Image 1 (spheres, rainbow, N blue to C red):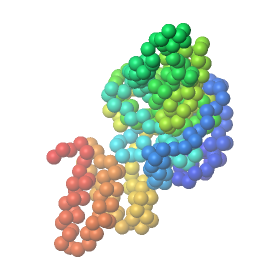
Image 2 (image 1 turned 45 degrees about the horizontal axis):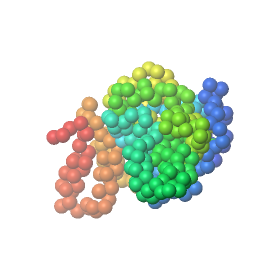
Image 3 (image 1 turned 135 degrees about the vertical axis):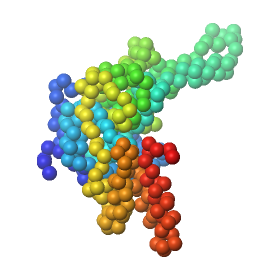
Image 4 (image 1 turned 30 degrees about the vertical axis):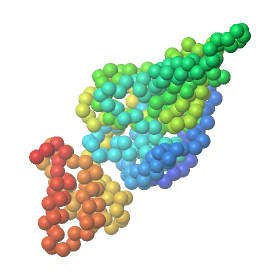
Length: 352
């Protein structure tokens, strides 16, 4: 295997990220002192890391996939991954994060209502207003003393505004970390027509601003806020700028075209429909070395489809798992196995 590959797709963690060369001069960022990695993970994050390890161990990237992942790492560019449902687009992000020891994948699942701000941060203005009203109502009524009845200011930077700001997945990925975080922007093609264009400046500059904190920069230059990891991080002067550009995976099922300016900023990887050899590798990874031979007829049936039919690898894995656990061995059960297998392998673009 070539020595230039930082990500090798072997499914085992290593410290190869330490050998990543410096970025090109036009992709060198100066986000200031690195933030500390999350000190502790909550139960949900621990569970997601377990899922991440499992998915990474099952992923079997091809040569082109490995090379383009490394190109994105070297050039500090987002990776736009296209392909059919179930081809492993999302799993790739987990594989890179696990193998290179880059922590939990930050996941931004796109829907039609998603906006750039959703990915960067959220500000609970209503919650802050309600808390201020409750605090004022709890204050003692003005008395004769000159100090009584005056508004009290919380002993927190910016009057405690940071408690009402939480960075989103993209915002957290752009924190000035010593090592790149991995961000999965899942199904970007489902977004509103404006979101791909809105992403351009952030992906190019590696930074964004929080207006609510910028207005306080003179009196509170450093404000602690919550990150997507659940811990506190400090935002300086209302500005977040990355130090190590994150490894960003943008996935698309091909439901729409993207603007040329976005494509220019990305490395494009198309994951083809898995052939028999790759399907056999996936089956072996999930069910053991002998499983590919044991279930070769099922793999062949999965591949035998009419032109235009769409099937996902999950359907094949589900059919094999059900066959194993149900223990269909008798001739009397063969009809049940055949019928349910046909249902599980029904093309996704057919409803009848």
